[in-house]
Amino acid sequence: MMLNFWLKIKQYSHVLITILIMVIFLIATLYQLTLPGLHYDEAFEVVPAMQILQSQPAYAFRNSTITLFDVQFPLMTQDYIGTLNTYGVLPFFVIGGINVISMRLYAVFVGGITLLLTYHFTSELNRQTRKVFKNLSCINHKGLSFWTPDAGLIAIALLAVNPTFIFWTRQGIFVTAVGTGIGMGASWCWLRWWRSGSYKFALLGAFLFGLGLYAKLLFIWLIVALFGGFLVARASQAFCLWKNGQASYMSYLGLVLMGMLGCLPLILYNLQTTGTWQSIAQNTTTSYYGTDNTDIFSNLYTRLVQLGTLLDSGHLWYLGNIYTNFLMPSIFLIAFCLSVWLAIKHKNIISLVPFVVIGLVAMQSIVTVSALWITHFAVIMVWPAVAIATVAAQIVRHANAYRVNIIVIVTLILLLITEAKTTWHYHQALTESGGLSDHSDAVYDMATWLEKNADGDVMAMDWGLSASVTFLTHGHVNPIESFGYDWHDTRQFEEMITPHLQSQQKTIFLWRSPDEVIFDRSQNFKALYHPLELEETILEAFYERNGRPVFGATQLVPVGTAENKP
Image (cartoon, rainbow, N blue to C red; front, side):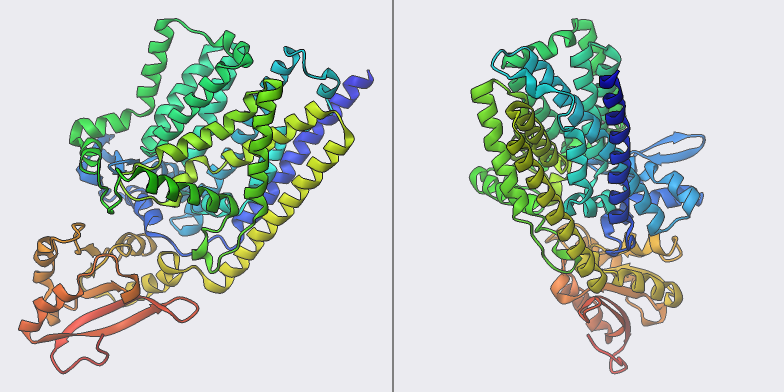
């Protein structure tokens, strides 16, 4: 009776603690939700959703669509990014209107689901570990009482105050954070399959693996890493974990088919365009952004440095300042050493699995079709918390000593406090800055000004301008991207701009500030309008809150009449 009473108390306390953690997460993510400013990548993925709701033709990458009910739905937003966010945000636009808050509420919702999936996966992983412990004679069974900490709660508590998880969740479309939740869901399903032998979990997990691949092609890093973690666990005495998960060849065929179903839009897209294959082939040795994929050691060094930065949260400079928490990478390294110790001395390989997953993703990420961006690590942003939580729980279970419990508890409390403090510092910096560079809230001022003053065509003369304005003005102003995506060949740019080289057309040209330029077309532009005896006048400039200009709008006028030359 007494045991049942305490088990019920524990069950209800877990629910209450989970609710408390979710509340903290929501407070941290919903505070000043419109900041930083709308990023181009966020807007680019949701503009088609806006167009669908407004019964307009939706922009389709490479004109690849599928027609349902006489409506054309885009299949991809890029050669390697699907349209999950495009369609996922639709109900939020219907309920809350087409605006930044609705868009980011969708991202926060995805983050909340990711938290719950992380809880279930981490708890399940550690329940499996207890099962292994019971099969190992070297373990003190007195340490396996019901009073042991729940690794799932530890993991989501760490994530609920982690700066990376908070701010990448808020801008989840920007980093394709939906892949993180899909990865957790797939991992949990297959863990349930291997534990219970229930084939329905295997099928659901396979579907989610395919869906993650469709969400963003780099999800394949996580798929490979998870299978690597499985092989590590299987090679240990924990082999018994998966004895119920064995399946026939027909069963494996079913898994393959479910995986293909999950990434069916990606398959259809490539049957129509071969776009993904072209992107891979064209960027095999050198990526579009100039990354040398053959420079293995340099790229690996860069990724390892980025992994450290991911852990200490020092990569969020665009919020207005840089704050780091040295305690997080320090505890991560200590946890890794302890997991190795558990593996060697006590045959507990399961605690190594999260570290294997993180390491294998980092190793695979040295090859890219774009660039070595730290945002690629969004696919594993929850795994450091899973790793630390797993080791903490297992150390407490194994030690069966109050002093060890106290050390672990104090360490986790310090980590939670320092992570929360870092998040609060970033929020304060964001309040002051409004966001920097591509994330500046100056984009809101630009969109408002254009909606009032754009009488003719608007030409986006650089990357990062068009989609944001289109979304924020609900399509009333739809800047034409004229710069061309070829770094050196400007023929497309010249062909698109030439028809607009007349002052009476009142065409507005949007620019990034000189220190923000990505595709520099200014000299080519001048070479086109100078022979026509025209010059530019600055109509308006748009500034960060610190007074630094980030965007500008110009117009062509007859020579000698410019009131504000660039």
